[in-house]
Image 1 (tube, rainbow, N blue to C red):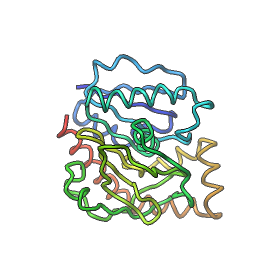
Image 2: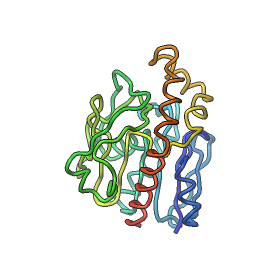
Image 3: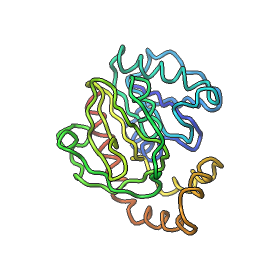
Image 4: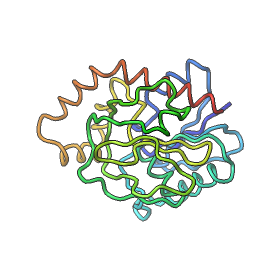
Length: 236
């Protein structure tokens, strides 16, 4: 079993999911699209993960590789029908690639916000064992405004109706970050685009508050990530 991970920045890696992969001796290959790496042949892979990033799904002229990435996602989910997990930008790309729509999130969600599973989410195997309400790390200025066909919404927040969704029988995605680890926030703000989104959206001193909340919530965040990982493994 091998997983292909599409990354848009080096800093937007699978985070604490890497520990889960290591503990289960699962092999994975990262494709750094923002560094110009090409997506390889897909035959060797049992699952696909698509991570986050500061780019917008519609910025194809600025990031030409987005066009190929969307086509690969569509092919993977609709034709190959193999397990898929999208996080943040990966969530938006899944929607866009399969005929949904995305638009600016106003106001942006940056920091810790509560998401709530609906009945579909509570009963979905990807969220088995998780609380109906969870505080999750959000860092997005774009949201899914129209879901693709054959899609159900699994979770929402006060500001964003589509926090998690399932497409068909094998593709799941979350707008929020399940992969948070202790150095995630500091790693992200080392990137100029991420830092700019923070400074534009939050008041002075907010970063310190987010760091503090992250430290307090880390045991729960790690536990939730592991549960989602194990639930995802059950569909492979």
